[in-house]
Length: 309
Image 1 (cartoon, rainbow, N blue to C red):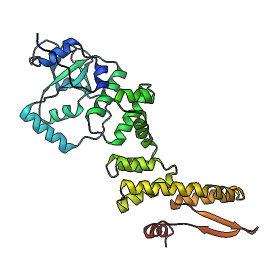
Image 2 (image 1 turned 30 degrees about the horizontal axis):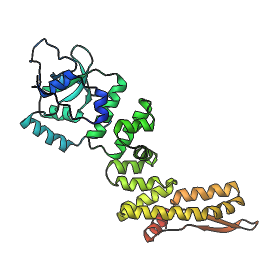
Image 3 (image 1 turned 45 degrees about the vertical axis):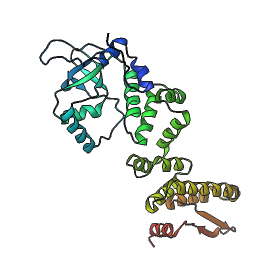
Image 4 (image 1 turned 60 degrees about the vertical axis):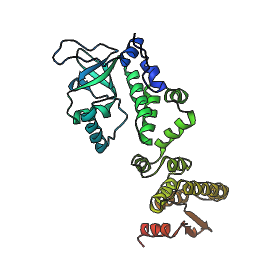
């Protein structure tokens, strides 16, 4: 009997796939294939060759961005060496399969002009399909942080998992899972910058600790225009939070004597200029001043532009 060897999968995915002894033996043997034109149907649990046209794209695929240049490079490799790592599919009916994992390999194989592709054939329900696809991609693909966060959120929403259970599935601690999920609370423009690798996960983690959206956007602009390092951003965030705590009691005291209308005007101005704005109203006649602080000459120029100066 040929010596058994286990498939090199991540712990979470391996548990989900629950490879049988038959499949493990099949991996150590020559890959079995179905001859073109044969009436033989690939067996569930086997490593077989299936027609690419019989494989449906996985509707649960978390990856939305495929690098065309990288796909072409993989396609060139496939032309020379063949596809070394099979895709994984589930059997739908007589000759139809649905992709569980390996969409990048499937796309590159199509570019390479292949008509057939080696595949692990599994049976799985929709929840297992989703978990397999998400876990396989998180563990094996270079997803950006937003794609990982969206994958985590889908596993929580669609697989009814708690954060602790999700952490066990993807071999990450709860704090890591939480940090990724918190990225989805950032403004869309910042999420897009993370997705497009304009800012790093370290920058994003610092921004998460700022509760005020306007401040987040201000720091984000400073990051881009000045090329701030993660440490500089962390220092800026820490300084802002400390100042906010010091001024909180003073501002709340002043706000008690301010009418609802004036408080709303102050909040609207703060939103418009993306910085703290203070209305200092004195006397019964309603006289006073408007204070618009700025952090630098560039910040002053930005505010002046908003004022059409």
